[in-house]
Length: 166
Image (cartoon, rainbow, N blue to C red; front, side):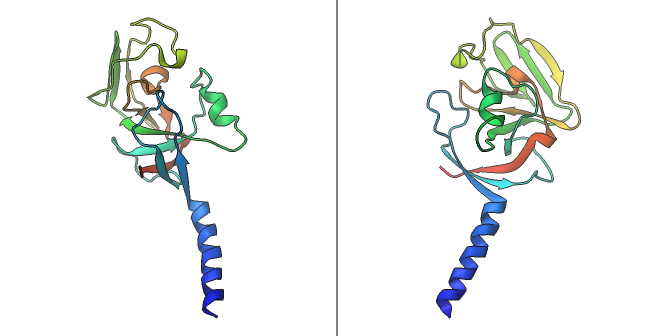
């Protein structure tokens, strides 16, 4: 009887767990965006998105440079995990090779990131205010490919809240 109860709880608990959580593993090496390899992702858009939180997102816009194919056209949906660097009203300031988002430095830009960024210093210069309904996202490692390059992401593109494990 006990074994049957454990089996039933495990079966339904596992089903619930798989509907609400995912484990993500980042196998990239020098092109990684964040210093963690393993993530727990709680599925569903968080009620409130705050600067400094980690989110999982599937960009709906044109991130470009092969990232779109990797994320949206994979055999099973993949997501990007990034840190929220700016919320509505925050500025994204890119001048020369330096970037600030939400008042924090995120730079210098690495213009050789996977050869994804074919430009010279100054090619991304702009001052942009994060509009309502959008966020700026960033990686914290030098070769991160993020809002400094491709702009903001819609809050509707956030598919979960991410928590670093290792």
